[in-house]
Image 1: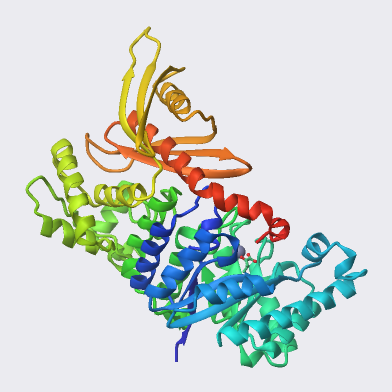
Image 2: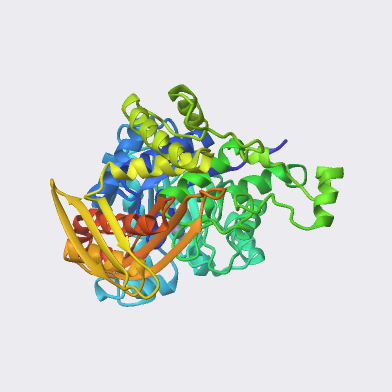
Length: 527
Ligand code: KIV
Ligand code: ZN
C-alpha cells in the first residue's frame, strides 16, 4: 500500500519572499489557477495581515480556487483574525499560525523582560501564546496548522512540549520547519522520529515539514523527514523562497514519482503541469531558472555529448530516467504564425495554462499579430512572454510610449524617452556610458527619481535569429529589492521596459511598505 504525501505549495507566500520577487494580485490569482491545474493539495496564498495587497490576493484566491487555501498568521489575535477574514469564502480553508521556538529566536525576538526574565519563562510565555492563538483560530476554522519556527535548531524537549501543546489546543497539522536550512538529512529525520516518540498526542495531527535550502539540502531533508513519518511537505515551484529558497516542488514530486517502487509514496500532483507552472512562476517573479536545474531547467533533458546522443538514439532509457512529457515539456514545438487564427491562439494559450477572457484574448491577439509580423514564427515561450507582459500592464503606473536611442562609434550614446503617467506624458533626453545607461538616465529624469541598480541581466529567451531578448533589472530602495523584466526583439527597448517595470513594482509596494514600517513588531517577524 502506497501512502499519500500532501503537497502544500507556498510559492505565493514563502516563494514571494524571494528578494525582488513581489507579485501583484493579478499574477497571484493566475499562479493559483495554475496550481489548481497542477492539483497540489494546499495553496498557502499569503500573509493577510502584512498588507492590504496580501489580504486582497488571499481573499480573491479563496473565493475562486477549489483547493484548501491557507493563510499565514503570527500567534497574534489580529493576524489570525485577518487570516480568517481573508479565507472566509474558501470551500476548504486553513489558518497557519507560527511562533518562534529556538533559543536564537526566543532570545532575539522576545528579549524584552515583558516576555519573561529567564529563557524558561520566555519559553512558557510562548507556549501559552501559541495555545491561545490556536484556540482562537479554531473558532474561525477547523483546519489549523501550527509551525514551530526554527524547529531545526530547537531543543528537542522544548519542541516536543510545544508541539504537544499545539495539538492539545486543536492544531490538525504540526509543521517542523528547518527555517535556516541548517540541519543535515539524518539529523532532521531523527528529529521527526524523536517527536513521534516524545509527543503523546502526535497521532492526532499530520506531521509536516518545511525546509529551506541554505546548504542545498532542502529536498534531501524533506525526503528524510518523509521517511521518518512526515506526511505533508511544504515546497515551492522552482524552489524559490527566502534567501536560498525552499524545497523545490517539482523535485519532491518527481523523486516520489520516479522512485515510487523504492520509496512507496505518491502525490496527487498532475506532473504534466509542472513545466507550465515553472515557466509561469519564473515569468511573473522575474526569477530565472538556472539551466541545469533538475526537472525544469532548460538543459534538464538535453543530451550534449556524442556518446549520450548515440545512446539516446539506440534506447532512451540509457540516459533518461523520466520522459520530458511526464513533466509537460513538449517534444514537438508548436509554432504559430501570422496566419494562425484567434481560435488557434486561444487553444494554445489554454494549453500553456492561461485563463482568457474575451477582452484579454482580443488584446493578446493584436500583440501576437504584431509579433508574428516581426518574427514570422511565434513559439510557446513568445506566447508566455506576451501573456506575462499583458498581465503586468494591467496595473502599471508608468508605461513606455516612445524610445529613441542614438549610438555609434565615437558618438555619445543619447536616449530620448516618452513615459505615460497618470494621463500625461513626460519626455526627457539624457546621455550615458552606453545606450542602456543613457536610457536609464533619461527615465530617471522623466520620473524625477534615481534608483540603485542591483543587477542587470540580458539573455535570449526564444529561439532563432529574431529571438526575443529578455532583460531583468533589480533595483533597490528603502532596503527592499524590486525586479523588473522586459522582453522585446530589441534589447535596448527590453531594458527600458524592465527598468520601468521595477519602478512600477516599487510604486505598488510603497503604500504597503509604509504600513509595514508603521507596525513596530512586524520588523521582528523574520519569517
Ligand atoms: O521558514 C519558516 O519557518 C516559515 C514558517 C512561517 C513556516 O516560513
Ligand atoms: Zn519558510
